Image (cartoon, rainbow over all chains, first blue to last red):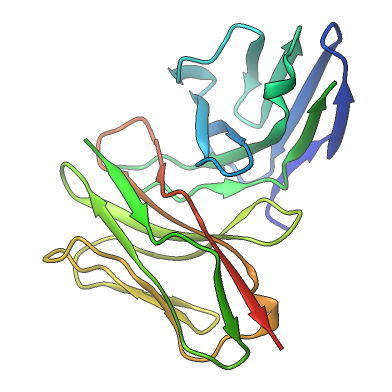
Length: 114
Length: 113
């Protein structure tokens, strides 16, 4: 049990659909992250939230819209995606203190865009 | 800038063989270093960490030593098992940033019985 849960675990959607990914952390952390993991590519950081405030947006297309209502929950709203957006989306959380940042990951949502 | 470079995989070993996965980094400031492991179908799990030079991180028989002089953090295990088959990621974080972890590209390890 990592303390970070993600739902759904698998999602198949068409390019015109709207869906949301959910992440919840039970670790009392103050920072949450979305990553994209595509086949044969390095992990890509998408967004960082610190105390519910977005502190990093790594040039992510606007068809990905994050939402962080509190320090325990993080959403990724998806609309009009492209097939190349198919990937594993990983959520992580950490307790930011100084420079030490051990991140705990959820199991991921495997997204397929048709 | 900050970056992490790992040896390219896949690495294929027989059970009980010795494992080394090389990792080198460039960083401004004083990074903390991590190894994460991703088993098939799962998210990443922290395997071990080191926060300052000459620290040795260890867990589950894996070890890595933070070498500032060679900017390296190589992962080693004396005797691998089939259950160690996974993707291994080296990563760093630097003090003062927004919490960003910089990952290497990952190295796939396959252990055969």
